[in-house]
Length: 573
Image 1 (tube, rainbow, N blue to C red):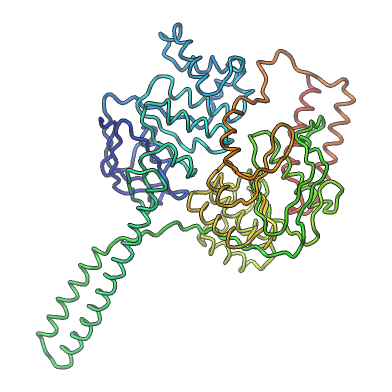
Image 2 (cartoon, rainbow, N blue to C red):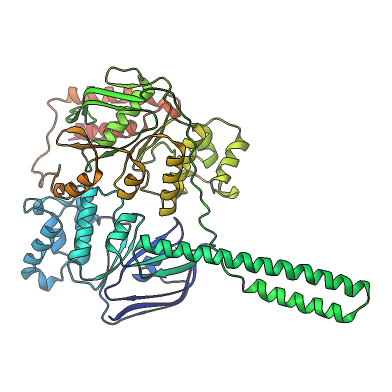
């Protein structure tokens, strides 16, 4: 096993905020490393230093001459969008190898779940999960010996996550470093865990779950040692103070010297006190009220349709209801209609709670977390955001923000400058202050770190809340849900064991709604029809924007604006 790179006393800051200080890190061939840390702890920055895209503020990094390093891109390069899948991977090969590298390209695409037909799909027509697989293929096609991943499972459906797991365990011979908040994924693919916290690095030659137990044991031992040290120092301070007083009262120079000697000893002990982790400064809390209703929501004999004018049927619900206190997980691959169902439920809740298709109990008060966080107006400050969605005085809202871990100087910051994790915690604070009795959480773990996930799990379980969740985080689903609904083959059905879904989901990886390279664009029959559609959409948009902010359907507003833009483009053709 050879050393691929070595960091020596590496330090870096983001502006005035120190991220890490004098880190030492050695990465060897065959290492399968997971990096874990709070949001904002510097994980992505460390990765960018390792791949040489930015230098550290201080310290040295030695790279082995044999190192072939690749980083999985986070976004598709715009120049690739007009290429086919096959072309986008082939062009990653050195020019001299392209003429005889087509077989390698085909083999790798097949390993990553693409069909021969999909080889010819244009990159801009494939799904986000397929683009992630393409970026992964581009990183490994040239046989690197070290690959860096930054949140590779974010926003992926379970099928793609399982495929990545299988490839990393069975096919990838290179070592790798992965930043991830997916505990199950880390346990499945890594053999070493690095915890980045308190500007330090804690390394364990164990996968995440076992490493976390070791770190917790270290923390417990450090706290016990620190308490003993504090007790010793406190006793010495009391003795030193007493000796100094006696020396003064009795004019005894020997006692005075002994007191000063004791004070020097105290200073030395203060300097070498055992370090105890500060933890994350952002806290996630969730207060949920109870309900005496028999059923919180019921849906009967309904087809859930895709949004838009040509609304296709997505899946059928024969009879579905949730009782108070039930925790229900909604499972299914990306694009099957989970978020569509949730958004239609929210629309009915705000407009027609006693409707004929989706009915809510009058006692129901929903706390809704949407995965895109569209409820948060990026132009508003933290305080203004809370006052828009919650009742309470400005001083009370500021206190709530500070208690949730937002520093007082940041309270006037705009939502636009917050990180994904900070926006998620602001959204959960809004839910907490409104005290709902029914939580609808659409991919709530996408933007929060592992500690945040564990806090959220504990809060939900302790609150006895009624919950409907969608998530591709298997451990989160397993820890929270007691009922499981699967959307598959045009129907929603209930299953008793989520492992049945996990085991079968990998076989669905080839399901796609994308199409080969288009040859023409279909235009509506007449200009009058287009104009009428624009008028209708503009009327809906105007009516909705006049509502109070908390009642506006921001996700539909976004769809309407995009459709208006598209139709105006057709008029210009």
